[in-house]
Length: 289
Image: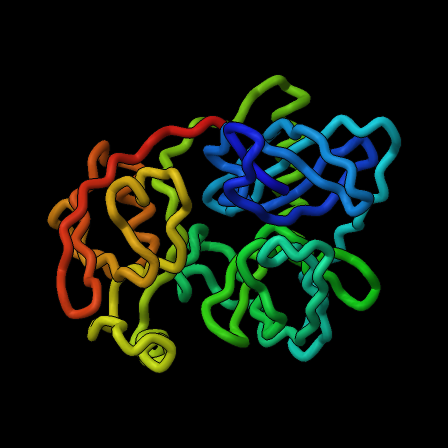
């Protein structure tokens, strides 16, 4: 999938078809706040897509294309049946390399959101060592039966990647279809355009080995990615920053950041960047699903 204001692609991600009439599941951060979404199928055919529903907290989105024929569908498996040690396959288009497949094993099926600080603090994520890079986001993680058991969502470092479990996808789709049948759109949501996770002493130690200039802090919200053309980018937030306070309140987790974004109109953000502190102003926007 590519997204543009003109005919120039400015971002990319992956997704998978869940209905013959062209409904596609992807990550919310892949399509949220995009002026235009285009989908390219494996056949090479391209279509404009409509965003049908977005759950930014769970990082799941549903989009739709109008294809002239019925599309092949990937079936959802039950992530609750998944066990550590099982082989999985990640499918996507990392770095715009289409139809790329990587393999790995499931490290754990219950890496809690509260532990990681990932968007939805009450959700357990699937941790895998399958390689997930830029452009893989939104693509399916499948078992050896060819069933989708998760959405590839993020990579922390080599050998540590996370996927949203298929049981959560199934719940989102059921609620989305209900909203659509009742003619109710999803509520507007505050958005700054950043992907982050809670910084723990163990994670800080690992990141220090990967990035020599990583700051000497062991708590806060670690910025994994700043989405282009968003309030976070406009405010000066950068990848590998560690958010340590917002509006005078100490930040100890990514959940703290999400809670502040929801309630405050303007954010005075203090980040540790290298061994210096930077003070940024970020103004969240409201996005339509």
